[in-house]
Length: 393
Ligand SMILES: C[S@@+](CC[C@H](N)C(=O)[O-])C[C@H]1O[C@@H](n2cnc3c(N)ncnc32)[C@H](O)[C@@H]1O
Ligand code: SF4
Image (cartoon, rainbow, N blue to C red):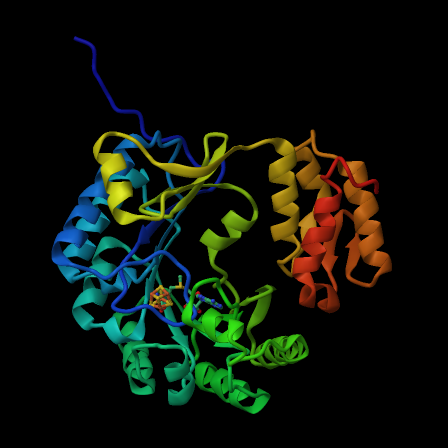
């Protein structure tokens, strides 16, 4: 009789991320364009079953190194649903991930939820505080109070997660430099392991975008640049190393999942609107709970904007996202990974960026100067020139 064994997944040749989009929020914040809908018991039930159905449609290449539950508000799920989703995801991981992040909003952080998250193996909590100032929270349409942030943080710490992040937003309407420094100070006093500081972007069709189009709030690029610099100086002085334009961590606490994404490794995205990049393709699931559910129920992942990954595309994105990180990119290593990309043209563009004082070369490494980091979006556009056939370099 021959012995049938299910072969364990191959050891990690390359990182593999698993992203689960949990599309439920208690209400819609005035700035947010992430796909989400109001939770109902039936909707959540069918969503959880749908994740199981979708996971079964994926051909899993190897054990996952990182897991990230984002949203939406995954931390809004009831403890029993957290355990159920945890079991569905764990069944596919092929081992213990090095990091498992879950996003939570302060108003829904309870001991029972935290206990369920610890039980399923979550290692990292990312809490969206945005601001500590009641009037600014109000202006963002947030549902939580300043007091809830402190209570939630205390509970998260008491539960003993390995790493805790706080999200803050700046350049908010009505927020001057003093108010932003006050928010940074309050966050620092909590001593999180990681801080994400996002400059407010006016996303189409959000309430804030409508206000902007009516002229009720104004954009101020100079103020934004000043606030970026203030943030970087303040956090550096407090022992938080900047490792990406918007991300800061104490040593050993950079988010592995995001690092692997920015380095253009592979990840599998489950749930409505979740993006995936694996098996030579990149695409996003349809951003609609019912359509996504109907698709997975008939054995189909409804993917939008599907592209076939080419070495040139991966090299381009690894460069654009890579230079947003303080460590920059190792051009020799990228060349080895993607030999078919137009590296002579990249070298010429890098030269141009260096001449403009936006980037610097140190051996094989290309990294941005602080001024380049301030202009990271336009640096990205310039780097794209190297990959465009039409534009001579
Ligand atoms: C996917 S959201 C979900 C987090 C969680 N639901 C919460 O709100 O606490 C992750 C983070 O993105 C940031 N964010 C979302 N929309 C933004 C925008 N329009 N401009 C800047 N930051 C934004 C916020 O800091 C938010 O905490
Ligand atoms: S910011 Fe978070 S809580 Fe607010 S609508 Fe977006 S995902 Fe939901």
